[in-house]
Length: 234
Image 1 (cartoon, helix red, strand yellow):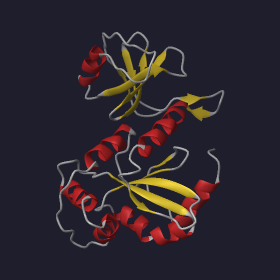
Image 2: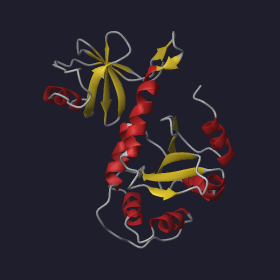
Image 3: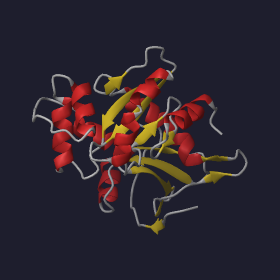
Image 4: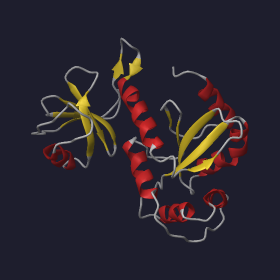
């Protein structure tokens, strides 16, 4: 078990019948601790609700008094409750941005991964230098933007220019090679992609989402990534 267990008085009325609607008083209470709830539902743990927020997954006591952050391990089923919940959330989330992702498609596609990336990240550049090897192994890479310095950072501006470039794939490749990128503007979803990553609890890059929703928080060499993809979730 890690991170913190915070005791927070939350005088709320919560609807736990659906994942879509969050009552205004829930939103107001979570705002006090810097979180925006996106959905609330019963969890697999008796006495706890699961709350998907803009900063990841949290758990809350049914009496609305305690908010918990951290991993919950199911001893009977030998699995992390958090990860079981988040895998389906990640799968659905990245799918919504498939048309906005910058895709490097494998000729003989076997797997599709989504990678949250930042052009100033050294390990992002290292991963991108292996894009040919990844594609050759049948791995299609769909990039999503995640400016680590936030949406007001120079990197965020550069990522928006890349997403608005005439050839986004070449612009991204050039940026990761340290080349200057011509400034461009257009209607884009860089901010929404960044917010999606934050809602997954991502705070660094590269962050790799596998087809089954698993998250790899960091760089893996091409062969190691292929091995991970070919193995079932342990």
